[in-house]
Length: 461
Length: 97
Image (cartoon, rainbow over all chains, first blue to last red; front, top):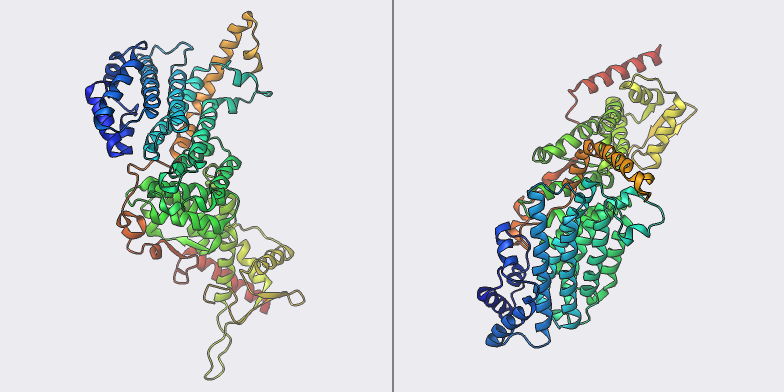
């Protein structure tokens, strides 16, 4: 808002009530352009600090909230905020007028202006005794820092300007991919400072900035995912766990933070093929997710579905997929093939979706679903063989001796490719080894002797 | 790409032209980039919500309706099952011969 009496009033009220959300709203860049222009023009660089000092002091004295240590901290915060707004205004005006054909990187300047604001705020915590309830201001500033960094990267990439900043020159080998995300990489360094300011606060828990840790951690995780760096993401998790008993449990944080964190933690476990852990995290994220956040629910399911396939060999119901057309397109063909045991069509469906599966990093996991499809096919053969001739009065027993040739016929049915018995036996041995099937192969008789008590564990036969 | 970094002035124009032609390529590949944007977990419009607004509560025990067994004994009417039965009969017949 404009730096006038109303602003000073707002500040001192928010401050007196210790309302972090209200205070954070005075630090948003998310304003209409004409509003920005008004704020920017209402001050000038020479007088802004003394103006702020007088205003903040005057009102604070009135409400009695702001002490002499905090005051210079807030003056700096709002002065850098005002300055950053000037850059943002310039950037918006230049991109609106389309005159930004030159090599001038207006969003880089806006990003850098916003870093000054972040640093002023961090100094507030380090040197000016800002209280932990103001941490919402840090959320707002960090959130937008990341957005400006991405905007700056997009702008530079589309202008194709070679950045000659020292950071770029010090790199030994020039990697255009890294260069593309240069500002975002810088941004994670800034965010990490903010993370440490929260995480390393030793004040008693109720006054601690540790409560800011998960919000900032989530911003870092999002950025690392974008930068494709799983290892750095793991560092953040380690850092949070290292907080130990001083650190409140994640379940004590607002649900938006819990869900976002659990999603990323789950995906990381998924990528490490720790499916049990992944399933626990993703299920937690799913359960706590806001019911109307459809796109986020879809993102959770995109990993939870392959996870379930591996951990419990279960498939999503068609009703579930129906509510998510994108997921339906992605998974339904595979699910149908698995269910029917159509091995060859499964391979085709996997091939068909390969690009998308690889991009979402679920290809290798889904590939392992082939075992489930194979299990179902072999199971069908077993069931088709029916029962032994019933001895009077006894429960009918399934015929548990299955010729390898029958399994072979079933396996090559879809592809019409003959495969030799050795290869079939190898597949069967694997199924037995992996616990999908119970029994042994009698090579002498070219027959599989299946267990009379549960030949296909967990499937009712 | 290395040539665009050489600082000699005469090369600058060439480099610029190269850079421009290079630029055409990524423009065509914009689509995957946009998709990638789409992948990012979104900010929730609110910070926190009540238990009854969660997925777990709203689905009315949805957990049970999410997953089903990966096999299906009822669905034997499809072409594939019929084909399979035919095939198995053939194998058995050839054995007996």
